[in-house]
Image (cartoon, rainbow, N blue to C red; front, side, top):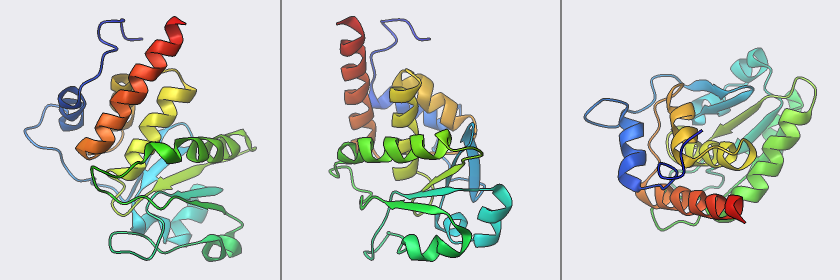
Length: 185
């Protein structure tokens, strides 16, 4: 666990974690990666590849880019019914001013439901599996596994190239501060 001093969070620090020793943040090499036990992060190509979902044993799909707008993924429960996969959609746009934090509790409950089911596996996805879905995965680890933003980002980044936008990183830092405050009370 991080010390109290290192538990303070900055956007710059999180961006350095995303770069992981490189000069720039890289796009994901794989369509889907298991970033934590039974938690997968991916993009639209993995979310719509029913054969891959079946072979991985995915039981739940959380679409963090749900909708018919540009840079969104238009899937719903009926798309997954033939595989008996449970679906949840979050209509988040990948803009720094988007409030992704308002969706955290819905996302966390859905991920919990998947992980508490026998053999449950969840795909958390957006268009690229890079910003929105990575933010949700990091926030989930912060809240449910009591990780700092930095530790959660390192955990996800160790398995997948990610790059939440600056607004999402700010919301993760805000969440980090809230969790640190709650820990002290």
